Length: 357
Image 1 (cartoon, helix red, strand yellow):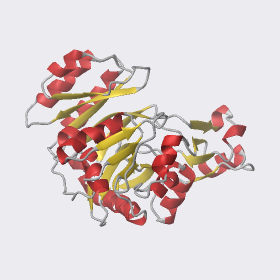
Image 2 (image 1 turned 135 degrees about the vertical axis):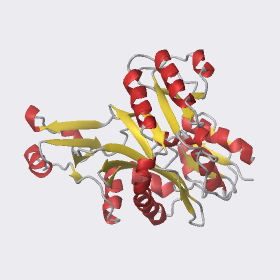
Image 3 (image 1 turned 30 degrees about the vertical axis):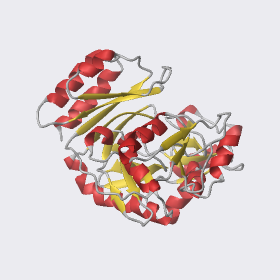
Image 4 (image 1 turned 90 degrees about the vertical axis):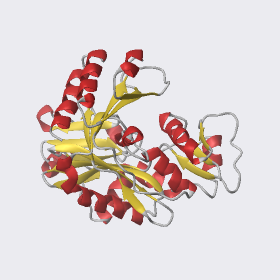
């Protein structure tokens, strides 16, 4: 079996490595700033846990390997300008947008998109970073250093946010996980619930959209598509060509996690439609100190990333899988008492959506 190198050594790389063990696949996450260059063999495969990376000796070594899967896709989707252009070219629905050019006036923005519009940096922004609201009521202006480096989008009054994660192999075979309901706070994913019966009617629409993208890009591996739900229609917000936080619940709640699916696809191991274990809830741990009591909560499956705790930083997640009784709700109530007060509303949101399942 060939070795799979992962450009990047954050928690996603670690989870890919963990998922590869039962497959007997050697996955090696690589620090992009490492002093020692990786010794790649001709039959090895390279993937990435991030869309964008700086030029370093390590990234140059990995990016010049002929078996870097999806190499051209990363730069295309990492730039919001070319990502939006692709979505438009495929006639998929997304929020109206344009490049923030040198001659674009803020009056033009308000005339075109209304009294609120969101600017996003073309590259580098994530978890709510790299965003800037233009608000006519506040007489907000376009910063000079955002021109040609950002796009501007119409503000969307959506009903809720959902995400679809799918996988495609080298032969073009695809499968999709159920649509996942997500809760974003200040642009950061804080919780997810899947699958929900009320979202099933939107599944074919979502699969058509993501499937079209996967096939057009001849993509191999896992991709995430974050969407706004407006009634019975979905609108693409952003794409991520990698394993994604919105499907972390699949580690506990599916017969094959998104991480195993990605390894299978890039390593050439056959895919199979995963079986989903009823209802799943994931709570992200953001800037929260490790608490050993989490492991004593019935039904809780904590995953700690081993990272330095800093305000707002993703340091772990906890998944609950419904087992046909009240354990999931009881577990969430117990967890609520063991987390900082800002989690009360997050867990109440999860409980409400579980009860509506």
